[in-house]
Image (cartoon, rainbow, N blue to C red; front, side, top):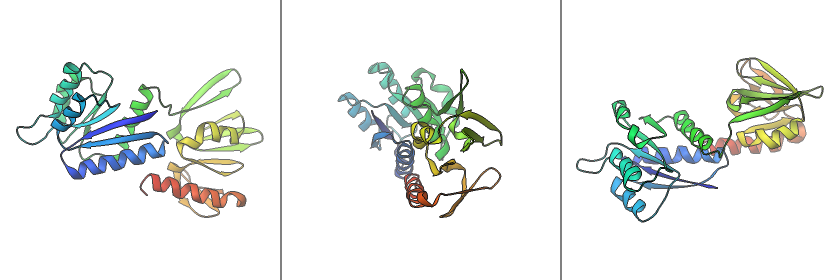
Length: 246
C-alpha cells in the first residue's frame, strides 16, 4: 500500500521541513508514499471536491486574514464530505486551539516548532491504528508469547543457542531462536544492523561507528563487526544515515 499524505501549511519553510521529515521517517520504515503540498486551504478543498482522497492530512490552523482556516477545513472533510477515513493532524503555534477540535476527531495536535520525534510518533500512531505497522518485537518462551517495543531494544545477542535482548534500561530478556531469522523477519525493517553472527544492533543506540567496531548505548559497550560483514555494514549504516537526513 502507498500512503497518501497532504500538507496544508502557508509557511513555506515549515511546509518544506515537514515534508522532508515525513520523507525521512517513511523511508526509514520502508513505507511507499506520496506527499502533496498545499499553501492554502482553498486549494486543498478544491482538490478534495474533485475527488482526491488522502490517508493523512497535516493541517495548519491559522492562515492569512479572510482565508478559510484549518478547523473549517476539518469540518468540511467530516460534515460536508462525510469523510471519516482521513486522519487529520492539526498544527499550530497556539495550544489553546486543541480544545475546539473534538468535533473533527483529529488523530493528533502538534505545536510549532515541529519536532522530529513528535512527527514520528504521529506516523507510528497512524500506521498502528490503520493496522499497517507493528512497532513491537515478538518472541516466544515456552508456550508463552512476549513482546517488547522496538524503540527500547539496544541490540540482540546470540549466545549458546539463546538470543539475549539487551534493553535500553539495562535489563535483559532471553529466548531460544536464530538471530539471522529474527533479523530478517523483524529487526531489519526497524533499521537494525546485522554486524556479526552474534549481534544485531539498533541504529538509534549507536554512539560511535568505526569500520571494525560499534559502540553502543547504554554503557558504551564495544561490539565487533565481522570482517566479512564490514563492507555491507558500512553501506547499510550510510544508507540509514542518508534516509534520516544525516
